[in-house]
Image (cartoon, rainbow, N blue to C red; front, side, top):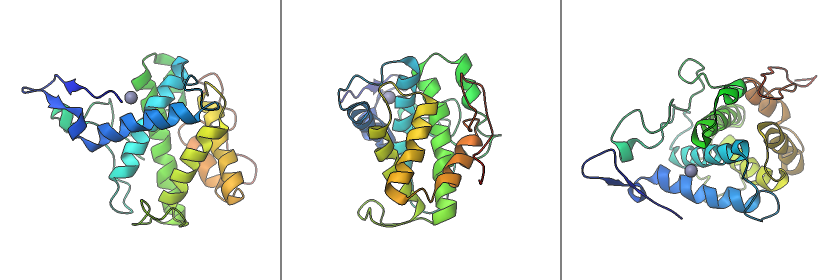
Length: 218
Ligand SMILES: [Zn+2]
């Protein structure tokens, strides 16, 4: 795992001393190993690599939660000694605070920037699952609960193994939907679709053109 000294402050600050940075880097190890059959070579396209950055931020956010509140989450405040952190926006359920949508990717070509779009979608998926199913304070040690934060992390991990090599936003979304079918019989289908669609990744999303459509019955 590559950790770095950040040069934005004097003295420099060590990323190893900031939990969300450490979790971000560990999550690269998970997503690279679980996507596409374990080759470690399946997050290579710009879009897939960008989503790799997004999963890492989303997992960091998950580990920072201490209550059912889904507050805005800011990455990397310590390493640059700034409340604004190292990303362009906080992760938020508010489209005013964070306006990133599927179509935002069209104008992006740097993996961390693309990752922000995916991480913010996952932030909204997390919020929707917690709203629907509640929140467990023991999620880190008891993965058998039915609360939304537990469901979120199961689907997060399960979907990695289901998605194809070099996933796209669309195929990664589909993997979440399939993971829910496999593990929970699809009970979270509409919750998931509505959350993805709220950020443009609805049924008709393709080629970085937004869709807010959800399946019939949702
Ligand atoms: Zn990263």
